[in-house]
Length: 527
Ligand code: ACM
Ligand code: ZN
Image (tube, rainbow, N blue to C red; front, side, top):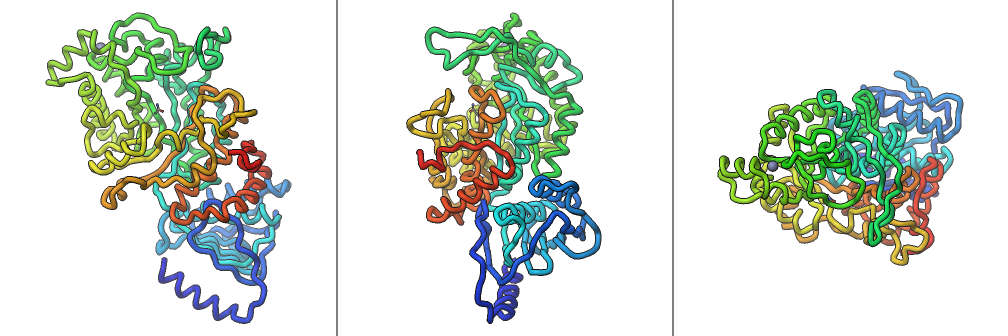
């Protein structure tokens, strides 16, 4: 790509040597690798053709539909095989997710290393079109991401979001060039995915009797209203296909062995004591966890995952692994017998045994596992990917021991936290404080040796939904902090404290044009 660049620059410099007035650099989030401005402009209208040379129809059609919404036109922009307009094509000299955007006054070329690259090139073009009402200054932009894994998490267990809301969330993250949706589908407070072999996971496990109000400090209170919801397998397929069209891979999370009280409610035989427990109505960490001693638990988990892998093409499957108290295992004859039989010296090693068995099973299906960083405690295999959440130091440790790591450490990546120090007007949130500036200034490589850096495959923010009951609330936790996060994910070495505020003033209008709800604090200067 560098060679192409150099040739291109020489050529364009020669052609534009007499130019007098170049437009200012467009404000693009996240910041592209290279921008060169030329003279003139191309006016994109609802009738501009998108000429698709290679098989990039999905990227072209998504762009056409987004533009239809922006222009409020009767029809989407036409996607055709021949003609003049916005020409999209692939070039394998460009990195797979990279692109070049070449705007001339008579045509625009969007050239990607793959369809994903074209998609991102079109997202950049979309931002320029929206900012200038269709007038795109002539320019050459070359761009590629810093991290291969650029994730956003969505918790549909604590509060449920409809199919359309999940799709809207995907629209939002894809516009930020995020390529992974970590979909947290099962937890103590609700099981949200239909599993044909175990229907009671959803007929019983998707509903809780009521929900805790507030933080549950003394005196605790519940709202008395049943709450639930789940996705059928057809709905899951529909969402997965929708995400794929937007270059988002959905990583499903099936929590084990902790955060599984909803499953225990449906099938009490999954637990150590087998007594009936409710779908949990409280937030936090429950002692009710899956029994790791009984073979029936492993059979259940494998049967669930067999259906999950049929629904999700993602190479990696999230198996949870966080916050699993060991109280029940210590008292359980099955768990203790399993430890003895397998020569395991602690309950942590028993969890490691469970994770290793599940990893082996998923490997047999051609998949790999990712888990929250507690999976390190039981002596995890080097092939598991570790999602570092309890702190950046744990991520550094995992990367140094050779595991691939996704950095999502507390507090910086916890977008359920308050956004201002004063908390004024924010409503009740879980706690903490993370504002736009902290995210933008974060160095995900801090404390990581040069050698271990290559194991940091990506960065993710998490949006736990205990206190986020509605889509507008969820959006305002995500935006605008996701704009800062995507600069870390896509443009880690290109961040600029001096220009970001101006860029965000433009990007805010992009949010407005799309009708996305965002928190006002950053724009009000509140930290
Ligand atoms: C987590 O926040 N419990 C992964
Ligand atoms: Zn047990």
